[in-house]
Length: 278
Image (cartoon, rainbow, N blue to C red; front, side):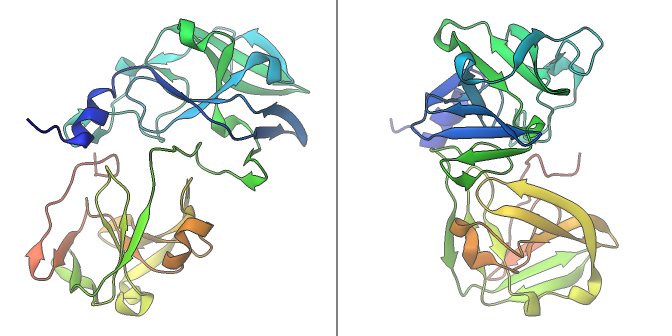
């Protein structure tokens, strides 16, 4: 019997996972380079859908100390303390879930350098001995080789694929057509749903208002958001995407989870992802 590959990947979601990478990884804090290593690991704690860096403790130029109870880093937080988002029928820890939320055993730590603190974690796992898992968001800048890295570490098993299309795409919100195009760019990023990036001239921009919200994607860059009277931050675009997503510059995409998308006359099912309304 054939096995669906996605099911194999999702089956391991509840495990602590790691993968060595060959890139030189650096991080700065307060203008100083505090991590510089060519021996980093990508580490996924159980239920985490994006990785963070595991760094050899010897390659960290900062003081390592236990986190004080009740201090800035606290003692960590178990997954039972939060309402987890879902990907399909699975509860997951997506990038919106703070680093301090723990789903595996270990020691909660802080890295201290010239008055700054960053959360870290030493997992109780023999395969990760000598490594500290560090809070990506706690540092000022990250670099893979000499290229800036934003959002989170890039996953070598994850990619985006942009395909030009001519399908008839309609986007409806509150029963009203807010976009209609025959020139979509389809962005594939499994296990997320296909995103339809539409030319701005095919979008009812008069029904949308710019939002102050910004998010960062490790593969696409900084997203700017658009709000509708019925749904804030329901659409987004990339005014300056990263190299691999350069084709979608200034094109507008909508959350399939929160609008009705009709492709060639067929309504798409609304998927359940961390971007669904909870």
